[in-house]
Image 1 (cartoon, rainbow, N blue to C red):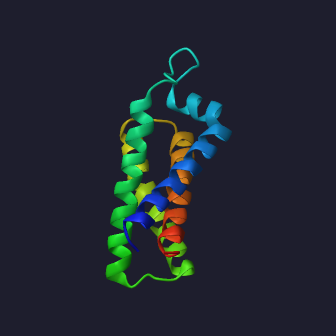
Image 2: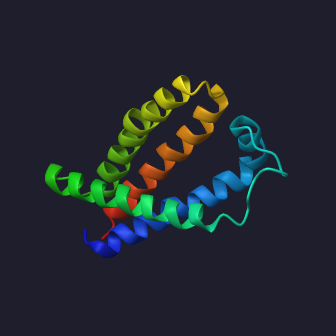
Length: 127
């Protein structure tokens, strides 16, 4: 599991995000309080920043996997699933509850975090 695996894992989760939010985009916009008039589709900082964040997550996952002996595709995917479902999503939920955001936003973003981490875990163990 080297730097290339981190980049590929980050890319896999990032591409999944593009697909996921492309499919649920209108519902997500409603939950996030955005409209076609208020959303900035040319906000390239968000696209670049989200990929950098994905690299950071994949890099830390790689570190945790190396220290924990996670080396098979099954254990990588399962560990990623656990990290997304039981760490990333509850963290989002906590923030969203205090920010009084709709539960639907937690669901949409939690699914992205969970599937994204699962994909990262799977990809990290392929190399």
